Image (cartoon, rainbow, N blue to C red; front, top):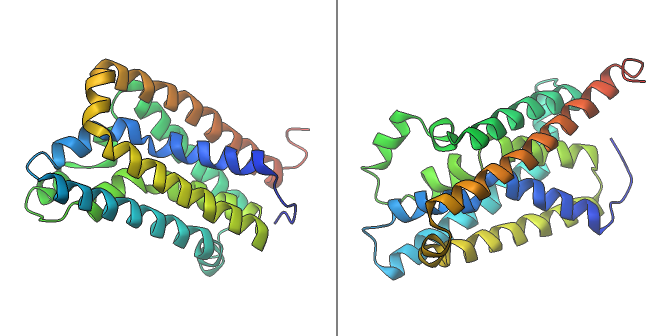
Length: 215
């Protein structure tokens, strides 16, 4: 556990990591397709519900994730490596254009069709606050576990949810401006950033578990 208090750049890095993991721009077409039969007021309600759920899920991971790891006897370094591998898998899916297939299986898609509310499932979970975002949040919170950092991470999560809410409000306009090609380009750039973040998680975990291995 690191007692160092992060500066602003650390919280910005956490925020960018979340943005790359969730890739809300890439989810915009999914959001539009899922809400295409809703009126404006109902679509805005779905948007608000989804992003409130994302914030609550990530705050839960932030404050309770360390306790859950201790409950199951999992070291943070092992979890960091596992989280890094998961993040890299998601990154590969983003780069190859198969993100939606990995985050939501066929059964979840069929169940979605008969649900009246899609804000929490599948938009918030698993499309936005999926395993990658949750594991990344736990890794950061356990590595920098003091109240100043937790407060900073909490504010970053709130800011992130607010940014996602604004993006989804502007979803129809963004699709017209970017087009599917533009969204695909943004998704692949986010995938590259995410790949680097996943490698960093893995290297940090290996360094802690085998301090003499990497010098």
